[in-house]
Image (cartoon, rainbow, N blue to C red; front, side):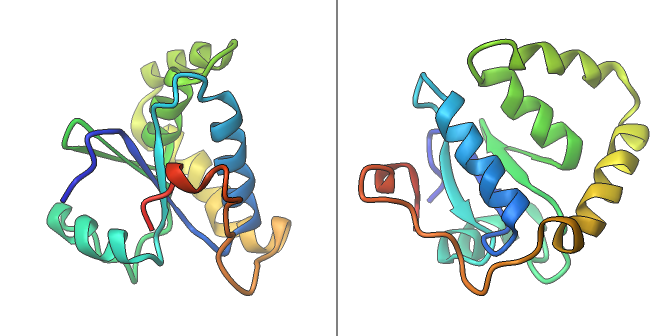
Length: 134
């Protein structure tokens, strides 16, 4: 069962990822996105349909309109839907993906070292619970 809303899959134990999700929630004034941790049951059911090995993924993932986006493409597609000036970042899609993803990979590789790691997934408040799939 794939959500009709765009779904952001994130590393639930990564502080940078959790902060990014909270940022997206704050700037998602259209209430468009749903969220789920890569470690959750929804991810285990949906992502293998796209050929994603959950043991090897090192990226934020966006599934929108039955299309899967990873790394910089996912981040820029998310920014495109946020309020304020964030959609302007979508212009970076003109940069070749291999260059954008190289920058993304440096950040992803060091995210636990720079922002540390949590012992367990972030739990949303009761008010935000409806935005999460599991």
